[in-house]
Every structure is written in C-alpha cells, then in structure tokens.
Image 1 (tube, one colour):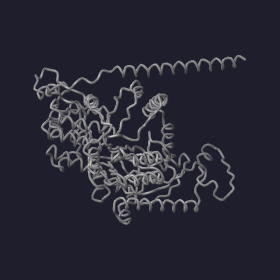
Image 2: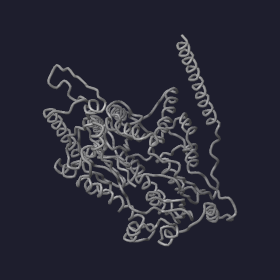
Image 3: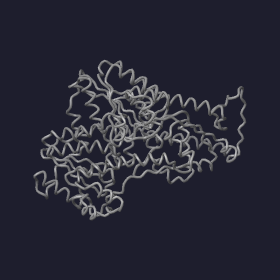
Image 4: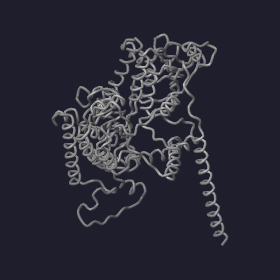
Length: 594
C-alpha cells in the first residue's frame, strides 16, 4: 500500500511540475513576443555612415520569419540569421545610397559556404568599384573567409591572429568494418562508375575512381579560389600554392610580409581608420550601421505593390524524400504541388528555383520533374544552384530554361543506387534474438530487415535501378538538348563543380541568385515586379511553440552528442544509414571541405 501511495504521489507531483514548466514556457513566449512588438524601428542611417557586416550572424539561402524563433535565442546566444538575397540586395542598394561611404567586413568566428562567399564577394566587388571602400578585419581567417575578405581595399588581421592557407581537404569515413562489428549488413546495388554514395558501406578504403573525382572537384574549387585571390591581391598563383604547401602563413607577420594582409591592428584601431575615411577625427566614434539594421530599414521603407506581376522564388533545400513535407526537407509530392500552384497562378510570370540539395528519393525527383516540365511549358523557369544541386537535385534542375551555378557548386552525380540494410546478425549474434518469419509466397518477406537479398531479388532491384538510370538520362538529355549517350559519358554518378559543369553543358552560366532573378525577369519581359517566396510555410501558434522547443532540444543534442560516447554516436550514424534505404539518386557523400 505504501508503495502504491508513493507511486500516486510521484505521478501527481510530476504532473504539476510539467504544468508549471509549460506555464513558464508560455510566459516566456508571451514575454518575448511583447518585447519584440515593443522593439523600436531601426535608427535612420546618418550621412557618412559605414555598414558593418559581421559573419557571426549566419547567412542562409532562406530565413523563415517566425516570432517564436525567439525561444531559440533564449537558449542560445547565436544571432538570428540573415537571408542571402536580403544581404545581396542591401549591398547593391548601398552602392547607390549617398549616405553610405563604405562597408566593414568582420569575419572573426564566422563560417560561410564557398558558394555564398562567392555571391557576397561579387556584390562587394561591385560596391568597391563604385568608388566606395571595403575594409576586412578578423581575429583569424580560414580559406573561405579570406577568399571573401581578399576583395577588400584593405585586409586587416589581429596582431595575435592567424591565417589558415593550406588548401582544401575532404575526409570520408568508411564504415564497412564498423558495420560488420555491429552485425549490420548493407545490401547494395548501384549503377554508375562513380556512384560512390554507398562505397563507404562496401569498402574499407577509397576506390581509385572516387579518389579521382574528389581530387578533381577539390582541385577545381581551390584553383578557382586561388585565381580570384591572385587577381585581387596581385600575388601570382604559383606563389599562393607554394605558400599553402609550406604552411608559411600561420603567423600574422608572415601573412603581412607575403602580401596577404595589409595591416596588423586591434579592432579599436580599425575604428580610428574608419573615422578618418568618414571625414571625422580619429578620436571620434565612427558612424556605423549594422547591415542587419540596414536590411530592416530597407524593408520598412519599401512599399509592396500587390498589383505588380510576381516572380516566384522557390527554395528547395535539403534531402529529397517521398511525401508532402515542404518545411524541413524536399517532399516530392509537396513540392510538385507547389509547382502546380505556380503554373496555374496567373499573377506569377516567371519562376526561379533555388536548389540546395544533394538528392535523395528517385521517385520524388521524378514527380517534381514532371511538375516542373509542365510549368516550364507555360512560363520561364530559371534554376539557381547553391552549394549542392547533385543527383536528385540535378534531376529537378534538368527541365529549366537556364541553369545558373556557382563555381563552387557540386552538381551532376547523374546516377542511381539502391541500398537495403539487414540486421539479422545484429539481432541473432549480438542481441541473441531469434526472428522467425512465416510467409505465404516465395518472396513475401522481400526487403526484410532480418535476411539478405537472394539472387532473384538482387536481379529485380538491378533491373529497376537500370530503368531508373535510363529515365534519368532521358530527362537530362531532353532538358539540356543533348543525346543520352553524351549525358551518359559525363554521368555515371560523377560529381562536377559548377566551373567544370559549364563546358559540359550541365549548366549555362556562372552566377548567383540575383543573376537568376534578373534573367527570369528578362525572359518574362518584366521591368516592374515583386518577389514572392515559396513554399509558403504556415504554422499554427501551438505548432510554432512545439517546433521551437524541439529545435532547441535538437540543437542541444548536436552540441553535446560527442560527449555522450561511442554508443550515441553510432546510434546517430545508424539512423542516417536507415534513411538511405530504397532506390535513390543522391550525392556520393556529404563532403566536408576544409
């Protein structure tokens, strides 16, 4: 009886604790919203002001504005991200704004993908060429942030800082032995010489074909970066590569001696230099406006002409999966519905599809291809590629009128694979669980998690993959005006950079998102238009609360996962493995370029 009463008491106390925490959470949400609504509008930009772009504020392709994202700011000091298009548009407008005399780029602690760095660099270059100045400052540069900073009039470094100039590297984890140790058996069928998405599960080391393609696209990206830095800093490419080979630039004095930076100074000294450029005394406080505030002010003063024709900008980001999901990844059915909606919307005169995806489900890719092909038949369709537009991501791009990519985009990967995981050895030998199955027909348990595929089943899957690959080839050939033989010659799952893909006719131009929008307007014959972003994500207030809570939880998991030990890390990896099952058109691996 005593035990029963203790249990009841524990349940009651637990219930009231949950209720109390929920009320506190709701109170925090309401308080945050009230505080947000009470925020003053951005201060007006003064004459002779300098815009301050700090890369610690993340820049992403798309930022969905949700008031309850403030919950994440309560948990984390990470600033709210900026949308790439807003930043590019702000720099462009500042070029014509007589109140703005320059931009200070602060890269300390910032991370930026090379594709985004390239777009920002182009806009900063145009700003500088207008006669205004750009200064770059950092406690420490890496390759991507230095590449961006190198376009500045003056590149400055903290006296105790560093400049990492060592080339690019990419490391791939091979899991064959680990899978064997845990009793996991990947059953793999692939088509394409270079379709190495599944190679880490089949081999213990990298194949020559995979090493060749990774080396090629790393070399292409590094070569393009070195060429642009060379042009901006007037340093021969040979010397830049020699410096990378010799690791000569880890110390600030060496970086200055070799011409990669112009000055070693503290951040307060930078303020004095900015004051002088503004026409003020060095002892004064410079007139500085955060670029995020400039963006907010730009939005506040711009009116929206609801009668104007629209260019729809569709952001397709993440893995391609089956289903209707459009919030967290690219659901084939959901995005096909978006494309059908845009096709029939008479106010939409052109569509820009911004792709940042390594691919995924082949079926979902085909569904979106069909919807995009129908859309293209009625209105201009221009694709802008971000960091990735590979495999299923390229499948989506194929029907476009024009494809614009960054030199640093990873694209192509025209190939298909199928992977099925079996856990029979894990359950039987490791966990001592015996799974018994009863079937009505010879292959009723086809795809079972507890036995490997037999020869007939593998043959069926192989034929299905070959058929899917042939359809993929036809889609690309139709969209790009090529023969299937020509596509196959550059396909076979091989990955290309945007720079290398252009002469192969896989992309039409090198450029960014603003270039794609301008081209779409030109093809639609539009001079005045407004932009509308898709998919339009709408959530009920309670969904936003739960989303904010669980995103905070996910962020904590990512932060502390390494401290949880090997078991948690392995479980995280197994979940990623399971998500790859079925017939897929996907980039070989998620390359981390350093």
